Image 1 (tube, helix red, strand yellow):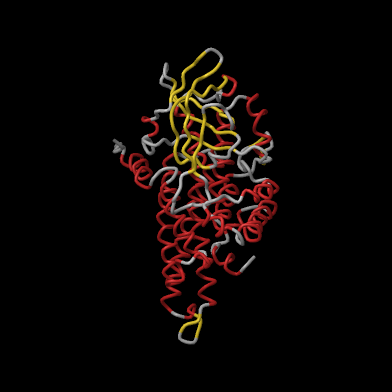
Image 2 (tube, one colour):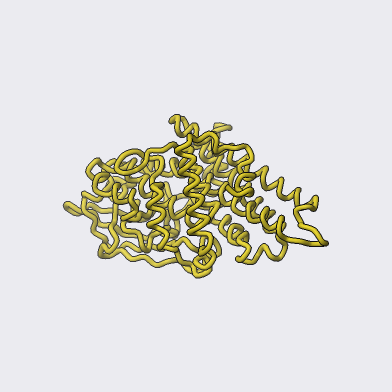
Length: 392
């Protein structure tokens, strides 16, 4: 373990894991340091995902970490969160890729699929032989997607016909299985469908010119009279409340990912402070630089402790939507602040990709907004503490 990594876990939260889980966490860290760090800036610049790392991620056995059975490891929510943090510490795009596949897509299967469907798809997803995507957000429906879903599903004999568009769908252009959420035109219920890559009528185009998470390939998916057999409808998804179960499970992971993004920027800044010389000595010896480093570490430690307790509640089956929303909102605000201080510490060098911090600064903007904006998460918590709903 490097000195920078050791100091970023200032309260030794890793000690909460048993020896086996700590070893897995360290393997994830080593993989990110040796296989991802040397190449990620190139792929980030080209706006491409380094698919050659997928077999290595598969060997780690971390797809669907907190789910049990069908090839998933059945580990704790705490370990799952720390793995999301570790992936994001190396690169937030890789963490997002795994969050979409192992969290949203596999989570939809574990929580909303029938036994037959789980047996059919989950083992291959756990081995990462099949990659998943999650299609909920639409061009005109983001925060209001629970009420504003426009993608429709119409029953036609033993099949369903899907029409509509999805936007910002991570892995959407190359995933083998895309979970599409659509509204039944007859019952108005939100239903989930597994649409396999290559299905006639479904097309995906990657969004271009993103300034954040550039290595994540987010797609606009268009569905034009896409026929999906009834056997591909998620049998236990009977309304948006079931969709929300998936989102509740993964929101904690996004909070952990925010901590990881902040940690990555901090560790690069700390290393830089020890190597960069000005006025004849390392800038780490300057009081104002140490002040910035301590502020960053304080944010990281406080956010990690918040997420740790959230994961413990999740493991105990006691986590609420409001608790997940508070962690996501607070952690992403502190992340945004922290990556800015890391950039500030580096001066002009902070905007050069060769020093890495600029990538974290940019990627933080996406983490800040996806899976619930700060404003919406604030209103969810506000409703819980005041008893008054302020969401229009």
